[in-house]
Amino acid sequence: MTSSSSKATARTSSEARAVARTQTLVKGAGGIGTVRKTTLPGGLRIVTETLPSVRSATFGIWAHVGSRDETPSLNGATHYLEHLLFKGTDRRSALDISSAIDAVGGEMNAFTAKEYTCYYARVLDTDLPLAIDVVCDMLTGSLIREEDVNVERGAILEEIAMTEDDPGDCVHDLFAHTMFGDNPLGRPVLGTVDTVNALTADRIRRFYKKHYDPTHLVVAAAGNIDHNKVVRQVRAAFEKAGAFRTPEAVPLGPREGRRTLRATGRVELLGRKTEQAHVVLGMPGLARTDERRWALGVLNTALGGGMSSRLFQEVREKRGLAYSVYSYTSGFADCGLFGVYAGCRPSQVHDVLKICRDELDQVAQDGLSDDEIGRAVGQLRGSTVLGLEDTGALMNRIGKSELCWGEQISVDDMLTRIAAVTPDEVRAVARDILGQRPSLSVIGPLKDRQAARLHDVVA
Image (tube, rainbow, N blue to C red; front, side, top):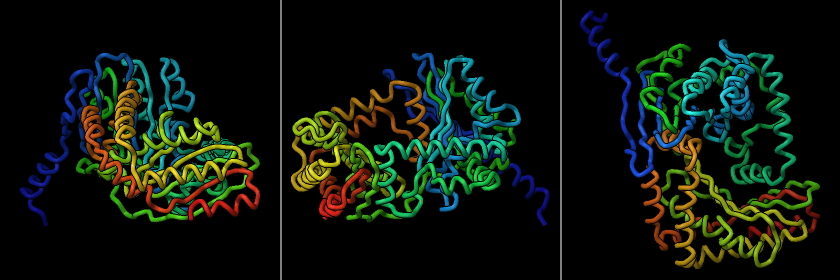
């Protein structure tokens, strides 16, 4: 039995924990916005970046759930749920949701990735309260009705078909499968025709209740906004929905590493009657928390990140073998990918792959020149800033940073870290990443003899 004094002490302690905590993470100066964060009782985090010089605002809610959280039979559920949250609540129909934002000239959308989902609206600063109310209502009050599930199933199947009709997009899903196999990171975010057809309203509803608790969410807003007003409006919206069921709950932290990718030397070919062959040649990369990611970013920029990059110059400018050729990196909580994409005529596919493989091998062995590295550092610094010139990009940066890293890095700090990358660090990460045996994914109308030679590329 607990005494009355013990109960009072416990209650006092509980109330002390259930207090909103606000902190300034980045102080604004010289055109850089002030970033503040408040954690509400119930575990909901709210981060904002205030820029008084603009007249727009972007409001978003990030959910700590992506396609890698799905079982095989639930593949596609996260993306399915993204669609369904626009279909109506107790307060608004699907038409009410879209009409409210359209009526003020705003834009609203969402996206699903392998490790997170985001819903957002971009409006004039004076219409921010409306955007907050609409998006919060969607996230906390979705009905997930069976009739909506059945209607939206058709739209999602059309989206899958649209992706299948774009081999330049589809080849990246194939590459993920080549590298990860039949596990959550290797499965398509959209799901498959079979898994989408098998999903029921009841299963999606359970998935929603499990993953859209306030402790799994990060609210982010950027633009001409007032942090305290945003906090009050968000808190009121979540309280109205009865979302704060456990005041003492703490936010879910960033994902922790669970596995290391070791897939190399694999080849997958998907035969399609296309005009071009689409290829991705790549290997394991770095987890998004790896401190070498800054050096990898410089390496990626120099190798295939622009018109002056090695791959663009060798494949397109000097030989005209492809219109589009580039390299890219993808970082997850515990692993990553580095890939080179090219689209070319099927008759040229082996020439293109040989050039790409030769360049990767040469950079792994000999590194990049100081001039290439210096140019890549400048390009990366410039593109980083230019990519943050609108409130939507700022909202994405602070929301993803809180969800994935649990911290905020100012633009100045990012530029400093990029500038601090040394040629030796770039050459070291080139040896580590590019020195691995690559894997290969191809979509196109390759003949049997051509297909048989693909394994020579990764030998």
